[in-house]
Image (cartoon, rainbow, N blue to C red; front, side):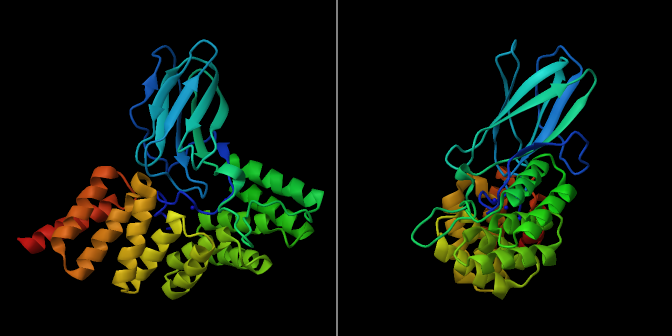
Length: 342
């Protein structure tokens, strides 16, 4: 089944198939965990990050519960970058449960072993409900729809690849997605998900190639259209991005991610009325999950010459996401606007 595409906090729906995964190695880019729950009786710890199906950090608070047979449950919430942590844990086996928006995501349950003095580092991908990115209507086909023509050997390679994605092993996942496609080149889900892995690695040309191939297989699929639009935004090919996102919205107009990137591309091409319309739709649909929209609305108001409105939007974004992807840029712009006023 989205975003540096590190508008990444935003996309509740990045048209990607993914699931929960554990990485037992320190991630240098992982933000410090928020204040954590603790039972005060051990030396182990669990820290991690909850990410969207695309691999990009969530923007909003997600409930995390950790329990054992003896302990009914310790609960904490992610910070605005998806970070979480539990410290002072006894050695033993734990169950970690993730409860994101039940309307959008499957509940996740992971078994974790904590050894004495060990820090377990986890990266958990949210998985969209029904393993699909869009509702089926008429001749619209979702990337999660089963293709009966997929050979069993290709399916095995795909399943192995998705397991490796959950484990955070992107390189091996790519190899298995490729093997699946060698067996069956028309494997739409494998094309899309391979493109997603390239997207995570910022290999934008390779990602675009896979999304384009998926669209050739079936042009009425939402996921690759949205993902290709995101790639084009990242490549600063904004007119092509608008074209792809227009197609995506013709398939499913209820997805805030498509409106967000349509708004960003319109903003970059100085189509300000369209940008304001699409960004407002993304914010209305995504609500707290899409606080990043306030940053782009601030840029829009700056272009319109409405300094006061721009300042309000920047303050709103920083209040919602003080450590967000655009936080530093927002503070710099806010300071610049204040200096101009003085």
